[in-house]
Length: 138
Image (cartoon, rainbow, N blue to C red):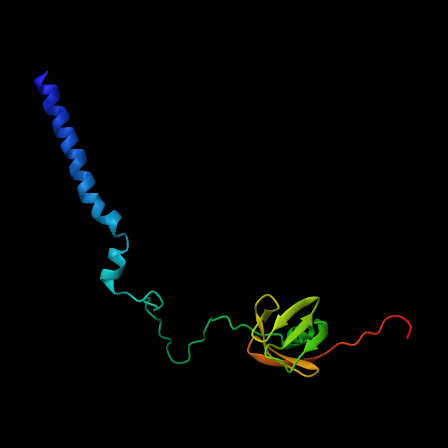
C-alpha cells in the first residue's frame, strides 16, 4: 500500500512539473518569433547569380492591354453624380464612389467628373464616359 502511494505521488509530481514547464510556452506563444527579430517580409533565400551570357529561364508575364480595354469598354456607366462632396457613379447597376474598387478589386475609381470617370486598372488609367441608351418612344 505504501509503494502505491509513493508511485502515485511521483506520477502527480511529474504531471505538475510538465504542466509548469509547458505553461511558459502557452502564456507567450509568440516569444520565439519576437526573440529572433526576423523580418517576415524579407527574403532570406540565397539569390542565384547568373554568369555572363547565361540565358535566364525566368517567366515574363505578357500583359494583354486589349483585354483590359475590352473590360473597361464593357462597363455600363448609367449615371454620374458629380460636383458634390462625395461624387458617385452608377456602373452596371451598382453605386460606386471615388476610391471604390471595381473589376474584381483590380481596378479603382480615381475620379468622377462631369460625364466621365477615370479608372486605374493594373497600373494604367482609363477614361470611360456615360452610356446613353434611350428606350421607348419620346
